[in-house]
Length: 116
Image (cartoon, rainbow, N blue to C red):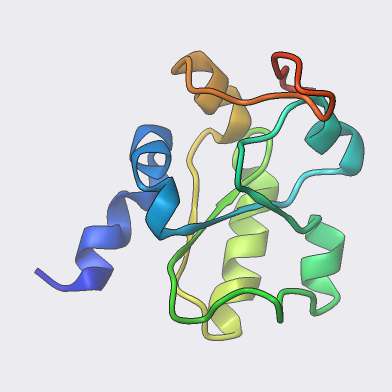
């Protein structure tokens, strides 16, 4: 099984959570959403920044899972990153699915996170 096939699971929130130490999680939501609740270790890169070419700080040799609130914006961000040569995957259901699975995330002040 190739690494690419193994990484296909990066579309599921539980798999992303289990593999956080070995992937890059990019959160492409707006700042107010990021501040309301984010996954520890995630990289904040809003969709408009990705569309404008941001992302050079990402490691091209490490798979990327892209998350937003529901999976719509992250789908576009994923396509943009793939077009730039990254191995990127859209996290299905986004932070709404993350919260529904009971996976950990916190607000900017360290309190329990919420999906804004």
